[in-house]
Image 1 (cartoon, rainbow, N blue to C red):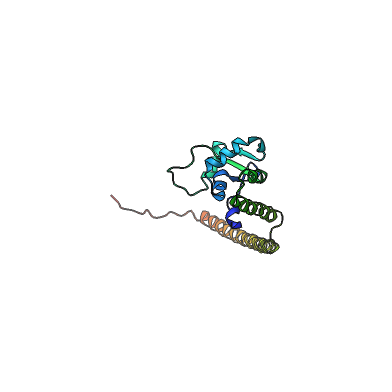
Image 2: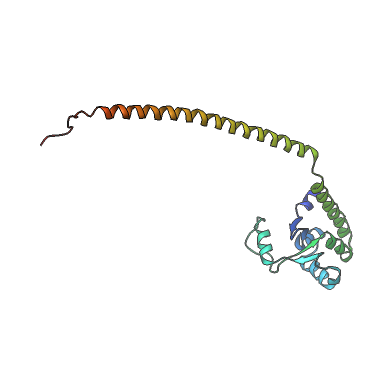
Length: 184
């Protein structure tokens, strides 16, 4: 099974990387009901840190990320399995398909962990370069902004001085102005 497909079915819920029961059932080529019945018959193998049922809010939040039809769907809240829970499933579903799928799933979890712990150096270096360029650009913009503000402040002071001189000049001449308008 392709690693990327499996990685896209790994979600983070309650701070843990998990997979949904119906995704696992599809990969194992069994019905979700069959998978869940096997788990219920062996519930002692699945403590709460290996498997848990989603709350209604968690399920609604997760469903909002899926592009699905409003018709049909699950009637019960799905169970999710952590990496350890999936390892336990391999003991229950003992078929050739289950073994191959389990190996692929374990590789996908390892790849996700490695990607989180060690992001590709080229991407980190590229992000650092972009951040440096962005920081330089912002500093230039603020420097230009401050320069414009200083020039604008000086120009406004000159305009205010010119207006003050005009007001003083106009006050000195209190001559009568002709009336404008129609005479009745």
